[in-house]
Amino acid sequence: MKNKKLIGVVIALVMLVVVGYFFNNQPQTETSGNKTTTTVKVGVLQYVTHDSLDEIYKGIKAGLKEGGYEEEVNLDIDFMNAEGDQSQVQTMSKKLVANGNQLLIGIATPAAQGLANASSDLPIIMGAVTDPVGANLLTDLEKPGGNITGVSDQTPVADAIELIQTITPAAKTIGLLYSSNEDNSKAQVAEFKTAAEAAGYTVLDYAVPSSNEIAATVEVASSKVDVLFTPVDNTIASAFSTVVGVANKTKTPIYTSVEEMVETGGIASVTINQYDLGLATGKMAANILNGANPATTPVEIFNQGSVVVNKKVAEQLGLTIPESVLEEASRIIE
Ligand code: TRP
Image 1: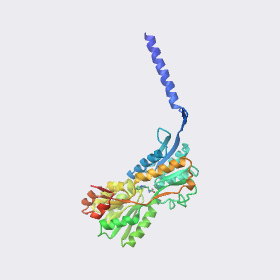
Image 2: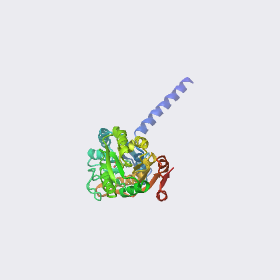
Image 3: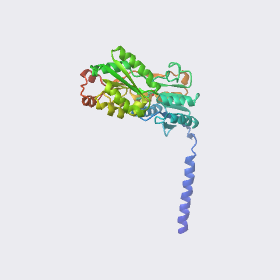
Image 4: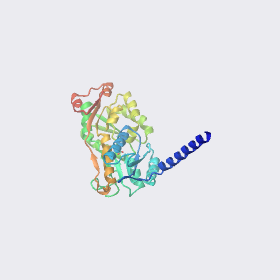
């Protein structure tokens, strides 16, 4: 009796080891019947954590799936997040290349730049890069010509200025809050300045060298300007609750470029849907995995926005959002 029990235990253990071994050594290509599934490896580098980039990553996975690539079926995603650290961007970019990924996706400009430095032959898809040319990623949006293409998010600046005029007609001075290290912000800031000055505003520049300076900079800015505007800037986005906390002390409204920052306390924005940006990025990546050439795949540009307003924030600031804006808004946060 005792021996039989022991033999049973030994057999069970041997089976466990054999099954374990088998599962660990699954080949990349599986054949079942006459169907062959090959798993592709895709590396994703996200620059930093903030709600908009997280939303883009969700869209990317959905876009890949729509294009025929799904995790746990035929897709392995090697995901890394540099958490805003430039040296991590470099290290992780190299790792993603060394790990044998077949295609790389960079979420936000600094991530795409890191990947571009790490490989000049693997296909690289830009996930929401505002100014690919200014960021030195390519020279022609229509004909990228190399290993890099992707999706570009370009805030409709004129609409943003109109929104500021309608909601806060008494405002004369706009403070521009952005990071001095992000190539994506430079082009938007220049465009915004020209258009706002043409509309009669005085525009003051508040460029922060790092997230450590945000609170102090906003403190100064909000004592000098009537309203603040922030472009799609990763440094500001990832510390946006700090910005809101400081600007609220002087009841200075903050106009943002994305919905996620209106949710966190901005007053209003003309926003490009972040999930849609990711979806387009994922679909483009799938096309390239299916054989399309990045060199001849034009960059997809998103430059149409919809109005999102935060009624609760407006009330706290003692402002009333005009009926015309509420009617036009695609979303009202109450
Ligand atoms: N477009 C930004 C870049 O080029 C990335 C980005 C996408 C972003 N959505 C955002 C930044 C929202 C701030 C807020 O890096």
